Length: 460
Image (cartoon, rainbow, N blue to C red):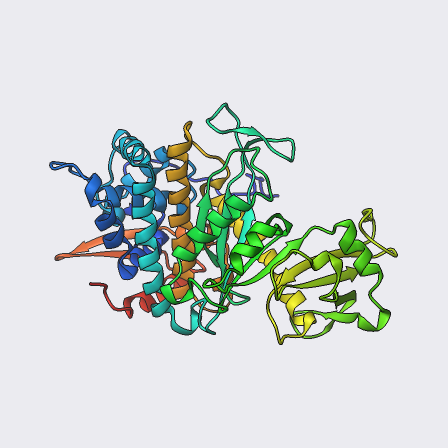
């Protein structure tokens, strides 16, 4: 009979190893920064904030924090994981230097924010060109999803307040470019707001949409090829009128609250006007139908011309409780759009795909948005920009370097399978070689991705 010694092998642990590199898979993000020119763009944008004899470049400091956040960090001090690997990340500023830069940029106000956002927009256009058929605008259309996010605060911070969900914290308004079924998505706006900010504040939605459009290539900042999607928080007269304004001509798909007027109009829709809803694969969605409210209905008076109101009725899921706005035992939802010459079932499916924004929000929560680590609102807005840079990298790297199912991996899976890979650093001649562990199941994914990044042209 063998003596049982436990389920796991017993190993002896000693410190002092020199050639091992932790988080070696992060070389994918470093190469993405280099090949997209993000480091050059951020450094040039923040050049006015660099002091004459400064050792560290402000752009490099900001990118280091963004890389730390992309690797799972949730505060400024987590940049220390990069400082521990100078062979991979280069010289990294000390914690006091990082904190001073955040304070300086926060004091810069809109000027500093504009500089960072302009650099991101410049690099975004380049990345989409490099991505080719994998880019979100490959079909000539761009979809931007707007949605609010509740960020809980566990201490008294500036602008923290009680939220509509009876929590305490902030209520940022985020925007993401949808990459479609074959990809994830990338952030284009992060507007920090107090916790008690309204879900349907038209001025905030207009500001968020304006900032989101500024992140897109110039040809997509107006015109029907750009679609703005949001839930019923954006279903206000002012916001819809802004989207449809002459000279802007944006397409929109905006959720609407079912008012008494809309409810009465739905009741009057004849049975023959209801069309079966469809699934993404083209199959009929069981127990769901869509119909369009007549343009002459009273509930459309006062809204922009050309607006269509489409309603979906669906059998509620088992256990779901009906609301007083539902009818005949069916759950009712509706949205407004100005897209013409498209079957209403396709329009309803397009609007339903707005749910992908929830996936983007989940990824943002695991990438620095679970908590705003600073006290004042201005530094936290800078932190929100850093979070967006980190999410940009986590979207651009798969778009440029990964294929098939790996392109759909969310940040947590990327960290677990790719970024956490260990490696040995070998110095030979004037070259430094990073040898990834051969037994790691995803080493081939990492090396293939690096090969694809190597084929991209060097910027500048």
